[in-house]
Image 1 (tube, each protein chain N blue to C red):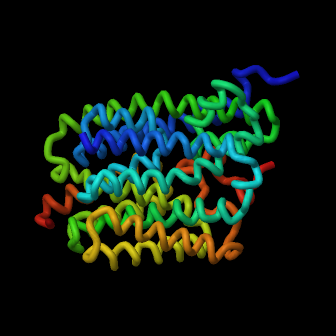
Image 2: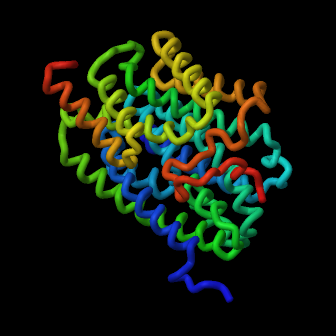
Length: 103
Length: 249
């Protein structure tokens, strides 16, 4: 039930954030510094989520098959593969490395 | 004489970006149930939150053992850019009444990029609505396909779904790393995450990284090119330069 509660909170906050852009005076968000923070936040959060999902298991740093998935995904992106292909490559790399005995 | 909807360049680009973006809803659906959410909770995120980055952030924190509060916080912070997009769409389209609420819900990276890539006001309007509503419909449909398939898969690790999550986050980050500064911010936040993992509860390292990123953005303001980090996951106009796209025109 707690999970449901925070899902709803995230959804309400997400919608109000979008709506805010339509309601507040233009000059607030036209402030280039605000736009810049919105941009650096996006980069920083996605980088953090990438790394956390690669090496964190609870509070431990672990090197396992997920690192192989990261490398394989990077190669696929370098080759300009579309989003869904990159995700499948990541899954295949992790599953394949586990078949070879990696944790 | 305006072009018919059939020949409208804005609507055409909107439609193709809707298909490309909608399809990867499959990966969100599958990863969401693998992270422990139910099919209904997964669908609620796609219908109500409807912002790819925020949705992936929510399930990414849950998958890593983070609390629902940390998950909601990460999703909320990743959604801040949508407020900036909303302001730009408001300047372009001036939606009123219920259209304003609908426009707000479909204000995401791709609908903004499709709209601002057009120069004619009519095409900007068509591009925004076709991309926004098209992605909304297809994203939700493919989320359902993905979550039902993911539910049937069984052990997520055996299928490498944790590796798929890593790949999805990297794919969301990748198009935003166009400048050297963007790469430096990503590296600093990655390092902050690794350093804080052993010391704080799961999910919190992501918020530590958010503080680092916000500080760099606020105090290092004017250091990098405009619109950094505000690129769409899938570019509706590949091969063209979007520099200054985020400046209201």
